[in-house]
Image (cartoon, rainbow, N blue to C red; front, side):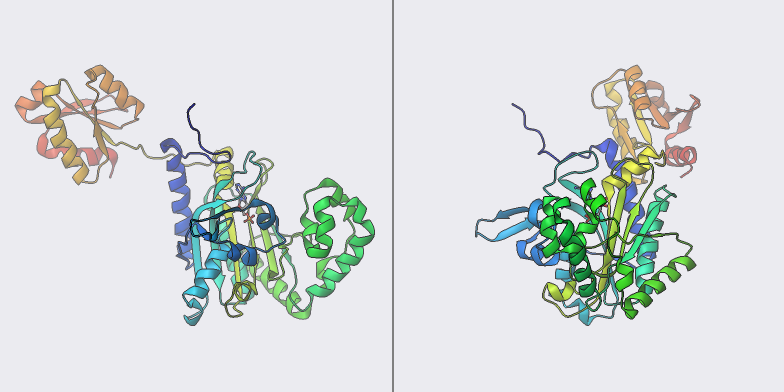
Length: 421
Ligand code: AMP
């Protein structure tokens, strides 16, 4: 029996990888416009990092981690997300001693043992951005603006930005208490998970996807009614800044980041009309995460975008750009005796930075031309007896079918002219 890739994973074959390169390039360039620099962390970490950095009560830690013991019996986990690793690196390298804020981005695979379905994989990819060291609400706004900008540049101008504040250490305990008091009497109407959440993490009940829970919690206390002055001011400043950037948003008081060290701003970006999995990304402020994973009490905020979802959204919207052909020049020969001349031309073209290839299958001239067509090559260079004796090449412009001879020395200039390069 042949071996296939593990469930929930997929291959990005070359026809697809162009799209990924384009998307990743766009995200990198945009992040750099906003002053972010790339960090690359390992894809596995000590399990404890995620237990502390993502949180014991989350679905990720309780159900979805790829955890294994290595040969020295250490418990390691394939990263389910990127923020905890960034916080770990921030502490480990004492980046808090450098001028703040520190603005990082990352791109790479994440691993979650979830039930695979359309738009949900066990190995998927995220772009993430994190800012450490500043509690300035303008940082929150800038980060959100960058996220919207990325999705816009990818070709999805329609977005639904959900915004909330989950309060802080000062005001959240009373909100939490209000939630518990509200939820206890209706406990029976909630799903098994939410019944446990009432004690462990009642905020998480707010974003339970279960229909029964959604109905049961209508009319529950609103977090905004419990904000302290600082939280109210912070939230107002974020919204004012977004207004100045002309980025629209909907305040959604059900949107939570359900961990104790998440504070203030929480946001999620939905793209309408791309199917059920329309949450492209989300993020929030985590002013106590660095402390929680063993560092000083340094504030932070970040977001992550799911690249599979973003890319399929772009494809569904028909917003993919037209990519330039993989091969720009194809060398065709009328017989094998001209293969050495073909190699000479290839070498010259590639040295000049032109993407060039030739036939290695001993195809007939006709079949070589068909191959050039399949490759959508704009230029074919023909080499046969006449060309070899005269020291020329025949150029064929594939679009117009126009064909003419040039001196060998003019090859690069001629090809560049055709490609406008
Ligand atoms: P989260 O880290 O859970 O806030 O997720 C951020 C984004 O990553 C989501 O909005 C999705 O776009 C994407 N994402 C999360 N989990 C998966 C998954 N299992 N498969 C594909 N994309 C995912």
